[in-house]
Length: 321
Image 1 (cartoon, rainbow, N blue to C red):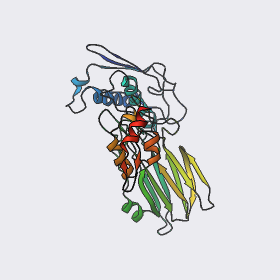
Image 2: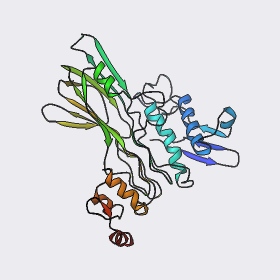
Image 3: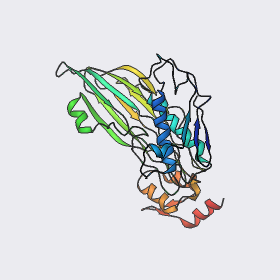
């Protein structure tokens, strides 16, 4: 459990994580230094996202973290994937402030680094190969703007998503799909951004896959009447037709022809979907982002004809109802 209390006075911005879970046995504990860095970027995003920053800028910020917790663990606690829990430290600050300053906060985003490792001994060379990368996803909408699609999560600006050409040239796998994850979620007056879906088909006799996808159970939160986004998932599809979806696993054995699908979530929506500009809804239909049925059921916008156009009378009836 991650718990935070944010107290703002004339000259202080206090973030108190008292009540957060104790030190964990698994490698998701975050060092205190990482926690403080996360609190700083969450603070800056609220106070002055585009302004310069130095140590004095952060002087009002006070971070309280009890010892022997997941954010201030006792040695020798494992911390190798600390970022997966640490990312929640910033998310809960924004969530705590969302109702009192909705103009400055965006809805929840996919949050996780969604780190993956595909490895094995390359049949072509007899040498080990390692493909290590994050996965970009959907960010939450804010007042006056839809969420960003296919963007790395907060705190993950220093790693790179592998290009298709590099993946297929260096490693024994084919990218069957790399596309927006068009799903039913993140609706609002301003829509959440889309995650991504990427399929790696193994061309080697054997490969090992490790994945750590956070936010795989609880989706990004909507704000001000917007709907929640969708979770992050990994799907393994084997040649025998079986498909298994999970959030985290280590050294899953795949064989030639098997496919691992990385799915990142959609950001949360902002505001009542039925207040979305009907033209924006029509544009989403034209772009294939929402169906006509969703436009009518969720947004109260009736789309008819070919090419699609807004049925204004029916739309008024739907929104009055």
